[in-house]
Length: 99
Image (cartoon, helix red, strand yellow):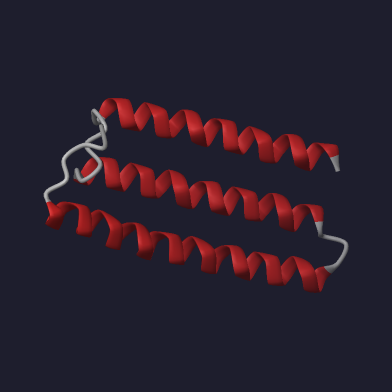
C-alpha cells in the first residue's frame, strides 16, 4: 500500500518538475511544436506509469489488473489525441504564450 502510494507521488513530482523544465525551456510558448511534443510525451509517460503502479497494486486480482491496464492505455491514447487537437487549435488561434 505505502510503496505504491510513494511511487505514485514520485511519478507526479517528477512529471511536474519535467513540465516546469519544458515550459521554461520553451518560454511557455504553448503553441510551439517542441513544447507540444514534450508535454505530450511527459503526459503519456505519466499516465502509463500511474497505470503500471495501479496494475501492480492490483496484481492479485487479474481481471481488475487487466481492465485497469487496458483503461490506462486507452486513456493515454485519448490524451494524445486531445492534446494534439488543443495544440492545433492554439496554433490556429494565434496563441503564442500563456503568460
